[in-house]
Image (cartoon, rainbow, N blue to C red; front, side, top):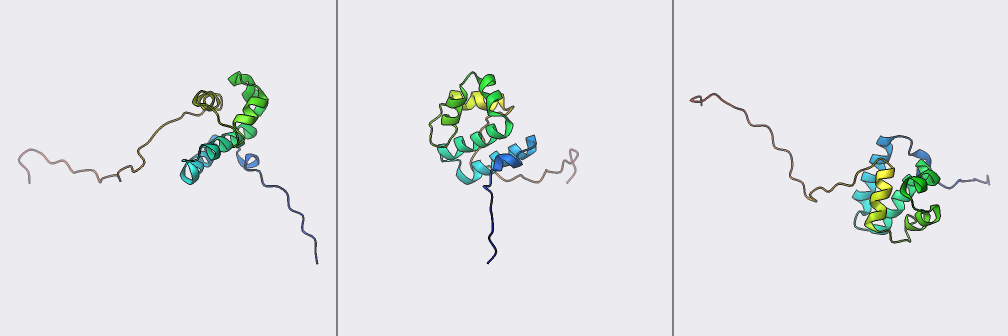
Length: 114
C-alpha cells in the first residue's frame, strides 16, 4: 500500500488579501459567533497570517500575551479584541440577527396619476 503523507492545514496560509480575511471572519461569525473562544481563535489565525510580531508592536501587547488571548483557550477582553481589530485594519460592527429582506423599490408616480 502506498504511504500518504499529509501536512497540517493552516487557514492562515490562505489569507492573502483583505477580502480573504473579511470572508474568513464572516464565515467564522456565521458558524460559531456565539462561541467567544472560536472567534478569538479565528482572530489568532488572522494575526498569524498578518505577522504576530508586528501585531504585538502595533497593539502594545506582548507576543506571548496575544498568543494566549487569541489561542481559543484564552479569554481576551473587549479592549484586546478592539486593539487587535484596529491593528489588523478591521472594524467591529453589529447587525440585526434577523435582518429584514430587502424590499423592491416602490415606483413613484406624479400627483394625480393612478
